[in-house]
Structure formats: structure tokens, C-alpha cells
Length: 391
Image (cartoon, rainbow, N blue to C red; front, top):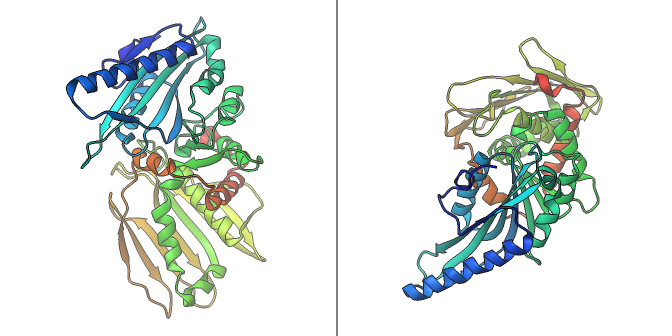
């Protein structure tokens, strides 16, 4: 087991215990808050309001991820004071044991004499106890609050632990850009969409697509260009293939193509073809015509992940092209060439959204994103038959 200081963002905790049970965690949490109140009263500071708007469960795979999450959640606490349970499963440990750490946090509200109080509970389960994490988590959740699960990395969709925890929560938050086996994981994620009353899903990769989708949609807002949607003959998408803070751009590229398929009624009949340049190519179908789609890896040294460019080409009378591309680290640009129509080229500020910004957005979501769900279903169809190890 790692040392306590290896599992937190700060060198100390309000309480830490090994081989603990749930009753002792609740008991020590209450004691920590009483001590906080005593210190506050003695110092003459205003009492803190212990506030929770949701329960957030975070599943991490390493002590480094635990530390990263603890720092991020503390910064976001003023926006979403919650009871946060950070889970570290270590199923390969030789013996079964449960260890827990508690941190309480106080935030001064600017311009007021009020303070918010909320807590983080870190739980490390070793050996066979790692498979019982759901039973450990359940009694620690505050009732009558929405439950969110943020799973770092690719979830083990078929594991009993994942099924048990997702049964407890209202929303699952993932980043498909970090999935190791993207075809299998997208299929599993899409299957969650069809479970009656199942968990709702948010995806950081989809969140980072928002400025791209807005700029593409705006091309076709003018009535004289709406008809061009029925004349699309080709789509070309370039993406950053290498990992980084936001992961590979392949999942964004596939979700972007899935979005177009779902909104425009394109059908996927066959798996993609692999080009020598690593590109993926599809022939899609719509109302008796075909659309050629091409996803190409395109590495840049600017450190920006995700999508690099999206081009749409139309055929027939008035054939033209519509192009959105990353112009710089912080900007997207657009260009359009259509006979008889004109739109000024645009530059829109669009830095790659930080993980904290995406998490904050998703913690504010309480309804299903039907557009994402449609894009995800088609994305899973697009990658069917691909070998994830070769992507």
C-alpha cells in the first residue's frame, strides 16, 4: 500500500486509517467536522455551512491519479460543494484490506461572510476487497442527492464492480479519448444508451467538439445553403493521433463523423478500409447516393490534441466546399467556397477545453444529451470490425 502522503494533494489529512470499516469512516468524519467548528468558533471566524449539492464518485487507477483528482475537486468545490468519494482499487494485492483518508475543506465565499464546507473521502481497497467497493461506497452516499461517477481511463464495462457502481449513479462521466480499445469501448458505451432507465453518459471528447459542431452547423443556417446538406459527397477529417493531456483525437474525429451521420440520416453498411497512410475510409449511404468519408491522422508539434480539420464537399450544380480547421493553439478558422453564395471567413476563439472546465459543465447536467447519444450510436457502428490495438 502506498504511503498516506502519496495518496493526497496535501501532506496531511484530517484522519487516516487502515483496515477500517464504514462505521469508523462516518464516525471520524463527524469528529473532523466538530473539530473544525470548534477551531472556527475559537478564532472568531463565521461558521461554515456544510453544503452538498451532489455525491461525486471518482474511480482512479493509481496514486498519481488520486492526487490529481483531489487537487481538481478541491478547486471546484466552491462551484459544486459535494461529498466526493475517490476510489483506488488494487485487486492484485495479496491480502484483502480497506484503507481510508478524510479531508475536509472550507471555502470563503467572495463578498460575503459565509463559508462553504465539504469533504473528500479517499478509499483504497486491496485484494478481494477491491471487488466489494460498491458495498463500501453505498452507505457513504448522502441520500436525496444526485450521484455522479467519473471513471478515469477506460472502464471495465463487463466487470461486476462497474455494473454495481453504475447502478447507483445518475450520470457516468468518461473521456473516450483515453480509451485503449476504442472500438470495443464505444460499442460498450453505446449499449448503455439502450438500457431502460440506465445511466446517462457524458464524454469529455464530445464536450471538446462543441465549437467544431457550432461552426459546421452555422455554414448551413442561411436558407440558400440548407439544400447543400442533401448534396454532400465527401467528408474529410484530420485529427491529432498522439496522446497528451486530452488523449488522441481519434475518438473526437469518429464522434464528429457519427454526429453527421445521425443528423443527416447517413447509413453505415460496411466496416472502414485502412489506407497505407493510416487513414480510415468509409462509403456511407443516403437516399440512393453515396458519401465518401475519410479520417486521417495528422501530427502537429503545437501540443494541441483532438481534431485538426473538418472539410465537407458537395457535388452537383453549385458544388462547393466548407472547411473548419485549427488555425492556432487558441483559434479555429472557417472558409467556404460555393458559387453564388458568400460567407466571410471567420476566426473563432477555441482553446482546447481543460478537464476541470469539462467536469464542471458535466456536473451541471441532469438530462440526457440526445444529440450525443445519436452520435455515439453511429460512432460505434463506424468502428465495428476494427482492431483497437492497431488504431
